[in-house]
Amino acid sequence: MGGMTGGPHQSIWFTEGNKIIRRSASGEITEISTPTPLAGAANITEGADGALWFTETIAAKVARITEAGAFTEFDMPPGSQPDVIAAGGDGAVWFSEDIYPAVLRITTSGSVNSFRTSDLIGDIAPGRNNSIWYTLPNHGKIGRITNTVTEFGLPANCGLPVAPEGIVVDHNGNVWFTDLLNGQIVEAVGL
Image (cartoon, rainbow, N blue to C red; front, side):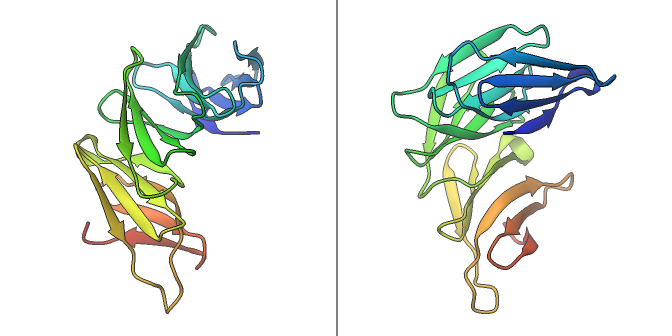
């Protein structure tokens, strides 16, 4: 299994290799093959347009599927490896790039903007005022994208380095992340 997300009408959608799988509220399972063979469907999110958006890490694509099963695939540059994905508050979908350290923004029409980061991304999450937050586990940092990229170094925890992985912004705008090395959930205070 790959990524999983809630979808329209209390459905659950998840990825598995070259399939997108939907579980309806009544428990009915529908498997839909990706148009590109060996796509490597990885992570998935519901977009503001009501479609489900997912990354195809092997095929170097970002794709969307409607509830009716209609696909649209968007090619990324050759050699790309899109990975984690999240719907932004601006109506676009944001995703990480695992080969060239960056967070990218794709619109429903397929227009892509890239925001370079200092290292590979662990996770991304939408924040307040259309910001996007991300983690840099190998560098002990979290970052925020508004119109620019800002990265914040995290202090050591009792002398141990911090390795932020998962990230979420709560309803009050507070940023939280998981620290893999120290086995903690941490609130990023003062950012």
